[in-house]
Amino acid sequence: MTSMTLSQQLTALLGPKGWLSAPRDTAAFTRDWLNTYGVQPLGVARPQSSDETAALMHLCHAAHIPVVPQGGGTGLVGASVASSTNSVILSLSRLDQIDAINPRDFSAVVGAGVVLEQLHQALSPHRLMLPLHLGSQGSAQIGGLIAANAGGSHAFRFGTMQDLVLGLEVVLPNGDVWDGTRSLIKDNAGFQLRKLFCGSEGRLGVITRAVLKLYPAAQSQTSALLALPSLAALLQVGQQLRTHCAEFLTALEFFDAGILALALHHLPTLRWPLASQAPFYLLVELASSLPNFELEDVLQQALAQAVEAEHVSDAIVAQSTQQRTALWQVRETLPEGIRREGQQLKHDIAVPLSQFPSFLSACHAQVQHILPGTRIWTFGHLGDGNIHYNLSPPAGSTDFSQRDAELNQAIYTLAEACGGSFAAEHGIGRTKTAIADSLRSPVERTLMARIQRAIDPNNRMNPGVIV
Ligand SMILES: Cc1cc2nc3c(=O)[nH]c(=O)nc-3n(C[C@H](O)[C@H](O)[C@H](O)COP(=O)(O)OP(=O)(O)OC[C@H]3O[C@@H](n4cnc5c(N)ncnc54)[C@H](O)[C@@H]3O)c2cc1C
Image (cartoon, rainbow, N blue to C red; front, side, top):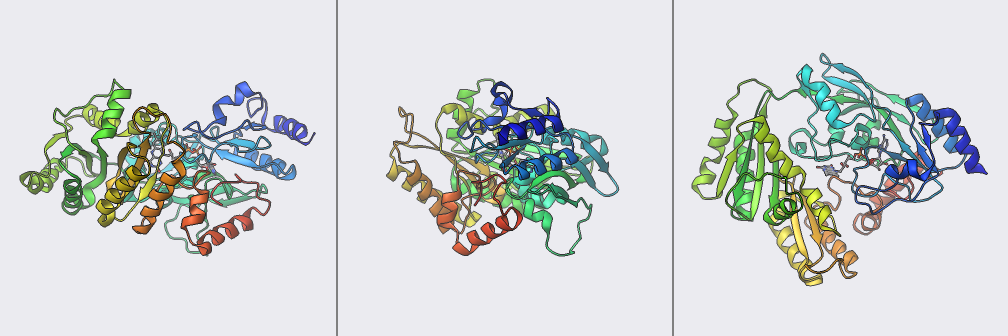
């Protein structure tokens, strides 16, 4: 009875396009990107404004119905779909207005539903950029990127999403609206509330609008793909590039030969430009906001020593935008290659760079000890020590013979023991709450639970996520 009443109220508030409850209409919203989580909710609410969002949150609050905010649905920890049938998915995709681009303030005011790629395109004529780039940028939305505190390929140079957020508008669990849309870098008037919502995974409120920090757009750019004969060479070359290219270095993406082969196998239209093969590859990008800056010279000088020491076995420098796009396409489709291979265990690890070799060798040994033959794929963001350490079952098997939990625990424990993180950039979501409880101190976990309870005492925002 309650749910019928809420359904009618939401239809009256949002109209037939704003409240979807028939399974055929909600199907596109109910499962996560990895198709692991999600049940049929009461319905999907699609407000068109912050006011509508606040009104629907008031209604859900009064009806005691949990709400799950959803952006582009590309999150990898199962946090943007319902875990109970008695809940409402709140899709922000119709809050897709870019309200203002302010060149004088180096800021933009955007709705939570703006897709990242759409914002990149809109900023380009203004010679401005938001330096956030990731494989899902054609679907991921600003609200989801903030709520997940996304990282991506340029994070080591420009920071993660939280470093690009100047202000926020947030609808709280009871429907109250916090308007913190200030366009300021400096505003120390108390707790940094906006930071609280960065990485909150829909647990503390609904982000409806954001003020984002912009940079002058890159006007000179060069990208290169390097083949490297060993892990030691990969780390050595990464270190040299960071030292010699300094602030011009904007991306340092690595991947191993196995995951490349998998992507090329599952995505035959991918173009691979190198003839030779190597255990590791590095996609390097240099950029400057000055036009006609000779970045290729900077890169060549940085690599001269590495080439002489045979730390680079092959290389190609993109000669056109088309070639550059093709190089990035290979890197960005690696997750899709693994997805098409079938069952997988994903681990989003960060370790201090000095710990990279010992972490990887200990991890490989543990994995093979627990389930011999497990296939290991590594790729990630070398600049910030972020390794996507993904597993496929041994050849011929379709699953991990019920050793999943053991494998996860071993890998995450090793990461933490190296001074690293078991949740580098994808968050905790539903997949990692138990591991967070086991690996992080009770003080840290209790602090998070108290913050969550203070803002949402009835536990109605995305329950089951983070804490
Ligand atoms: C191919 C691929 C590559 C990826 N590469 C990267 C990468 O390099 N770096 C990286 O960090 N991530 C990466 N991701 C993960 C994902 O794209 C990011 O986490 C992204 O931030 C999710 O945005 P979304 O709009 O899809 O959010 P969703 O998946 O819809 O939601 C993510 C979380 O945010 C919450 N949320 C969504 N919108 C709001 C809102 N308006 N208010 C409050 N909470 C909200 C949801 O409840 C959920 O908890 C990748 C994913 C894929 C599929």
